Image (cartoon, rainbow, N blue to C red; front, side, top):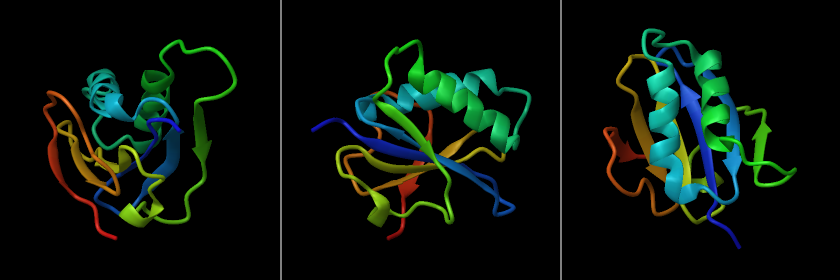
Length: 121
C-alpha cells in the first residue's frame, strides 16, 4: 500500500533522466514539480540539474531509508510502467514552462500550472 508515483524528465532532443520513485507522495506530484520548476527558472532544458532539483523537492527533508528511489532508465516511461496509485509522469523541461504527460493512475491532483496530456502505453 502507498501513494506511489514514477517521475521522469525529458527534453525535446530525445534525452531523458533516470526515474524517481516515490512511495508516499503521489498526491503531491504537482507540488513537487512546481518546487523543482521554480528553482530551475533561468535554466530551461538543463535535464540533469532539473532532475537533481526534482529529487530534492520530493524528499524535502523526509528522513529515513525508505519512501524514495532512483533508477536508471533504458527508455521513457509509458503508462504500462505504472505501479498504480498516481501513476507515471513524464515531464518536458525543454522550456521554462514544463509540460506533463501522465498515465497509469489518477494523475496530478489539486491546483497546478502544468499543461497535462495523456501518456501513451
